[in-house]
Image (cartoon, rainbow, N blue to C red; front, side, top):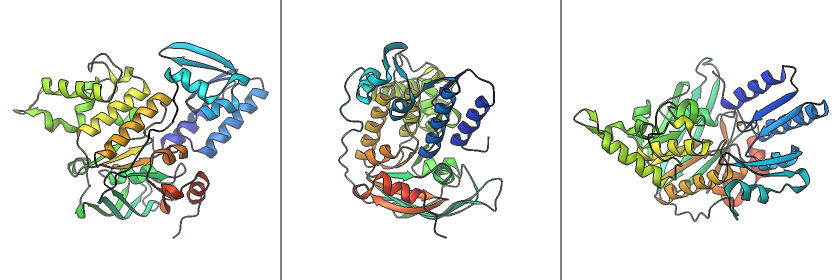
Length: 367
């Protein structure tokens, strides 16, 4: 489809509601939605309740569960752990049941060690691939330094993903213009291969469609972006590929007894670790992470944040695109806000609050 993941989600929900349903099962219905659209959907679910329609909602967003659920059942490793009434529900209790232990902090401690500028993007512009008169990324200027985690905040349709994909090998867009510099030298990213060779990696927001081959095993998915590193006499060295995949299975804590398991059988959190492993193995200098924790549980999120911190500590530049403002505020060193394809604000983490970010995210973009 030519629309983003968030809008696809809204279409799917509208399709379900167009039928005369008595029971509505929603699996992560707000995972791809911004806060405003999420609020509208939750209000709609409460209206359906008044009409006698029962809803079962599967979600990792604890604040939403507390807001609308009459009872909550926590499932871990395929087993029911506990069922609570609305009055018994607390976020701390749910988290403990989900991860099997107390989680004192949502985000791991992060002490940045920021170095010189590693990436600079100047006057980056991209047009819609079908309607080339429509500008979707408009004169974006952005920089990242070594060891820095830079966030991009924006509403759905603001141009966050379009910017990332157009930058990474022109995977999206038409009539793309602008310059990219790495370590002060201009580089070309006209194709995905060129982007990878110049030290860029992009973890897509839609891992199942663009990030993974779900019918292939973990081993092959991890090696896909770096087959040249495994080449021997014109063939892939199966033994080396197996060893590399096993190393990442252990270091990334991918929960699978073997790297020969099909990736489509893994949980969302473990699939995301496979995607990250694939791009880390390509040895990038800059990683663009688009919704890196979408649709995964609290425990897996914490592991992903720890991996992001580790990559930053190694001196890599990290760009994180997220619809969850607490996530950006919890892990980033600096945040850009984007609206209507243009950067509307740049804030150090010390000056960033949800209120300030929302102000910039909803601001009419300067022309």
